Image (cartoon, rainbow, N blue to C red; front, top):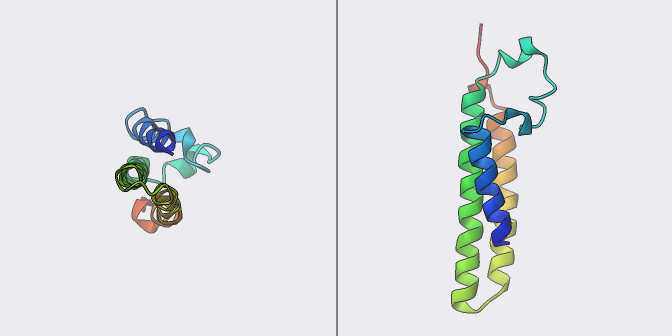
Length: 102
């Protein structure tokens, strides 16, 4: 599970600072005119922050499971991170907040 957390961290960095926007589903296939209607920097920031938060929850779950010697905590933390993080990411990144009105 700790590997997944590090993958989330790397993806967050690559999307925001590496400008790998093609990793954002749907953005890569949009026509240029449609891409100009979105604040992709804002969306990338949401992706980075959400990926970091999900990684943080997974790492805390990993540390707690080792410290308390309860391996199920790691699994619970993973699923909490995914179940909360993915819908949040989808809802917020598709909100009108990141659409540019021209």
